[in-house]
Length: 184
Image 1 (cartoon, rainbow, N blue to C red):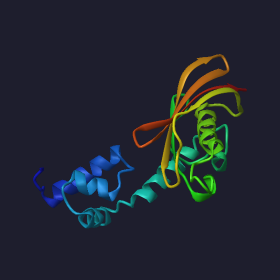
Image 2 (cartoon, rainbow, N blue to C red):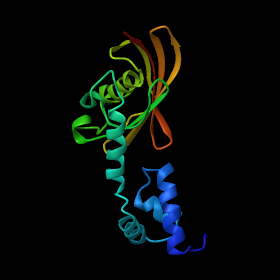
Image 3 (cartoon, helix red, strand yellow):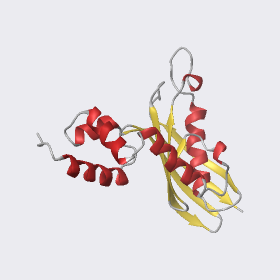
Image 4 (cartoon, one colour):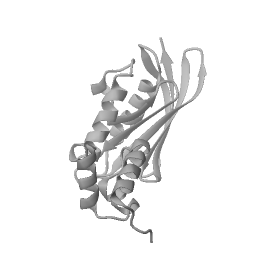
């Protein structure tokens, strides 16, 4: 068990940690710094650090401004990371409208749409279209799960781009897609 650290030192470490991990929850932070959730909330308030939802929103807004190929409302989920021509990440929380009523399993087109739009958003061009996609669903995704999709540009030849998208719930891979997208 870690020993408790002084308030000033904890707050300094908290700020540094959140620069690298902006999506850490208060619960995660309390566990990392061996203190109560209330202590973390007080530290954040004192330091002017917003809660995790607001931090996610700010990061997403900055990333949406970089995208050329689609408008922000076309992206499925929250765009939390974007390095045009390299890597992009989004988070999609599965809501009741996305699942089959009886089984509470997310319909596949929502999972595909998140991955496809992320692959398109990754390309630094005004017009980007999906040429083809090879996808594999590894396991069902359920109501209230958070789907984290990461797109990586694997290869580029001229105006054709091979983008691999891996979607996970926690550490478990639930979807893999290889998209060939064409830019103009």
